Image (tube, rainbow, N blue to C red):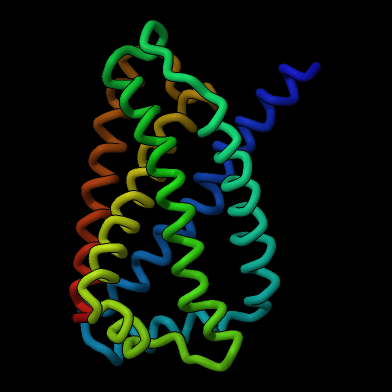
Length: 202
C-alpha cells in the first residue's frame, strides 16, 4: 500500500513538473524574451500577464501550489534516492544525479527570484524592465541568474524525459534514446532564449 502511494506521488510529482509548472516556465521565458525587443516591448508583455483576470487565483492554484508540492516532494527524492548504475546506465545515472542537484539549485533560485519580484511587488514595487535591469547590473547577480536559469531549464528538460518514462509514453529503449535527443534539444533552445533575455536587460 505504501509502495503504491509513493509510486503515485512520484507520478504526480513528475506530472506537475511538466503540467503546469513546465508550461509556466516556457511562458515565463517567452515573456522575458520580449526584453530583446526593448524596454517597452517587455513592459507591455509583463503588464499583459499581470492584467489577466483572476490572476491571483490562477497563480495560486496553477503555479504556486503545484510548484510547492513539486519542490517539497522533490527535496524528499533528492535526499533519499540513490544512483542506480545497473538499471539506468552510466549516462542516465549521471542525468539522475544532475537532476537532483539542479532541483536544489532551482529551488534556491526560484525562491530568491520570487522574493526579488513578486514579494517586492506586494510591497509596492513595480515588476518591469527597470527592476530587472537594476538587479542584473550587479555582476554577481547576473552570474547567479545565469546559473539559476540554466539549472531550471535543465531540470525541466531532463525531468520531461523522466515524465515520458514514468507515464509509459516512452517504453522501448529506442523511444527513450529519441526522447533523450529531443529533451537535449529543448534544453539548448530554451537556454538560448533564457540567456538572451538576461543579457537584453543589460
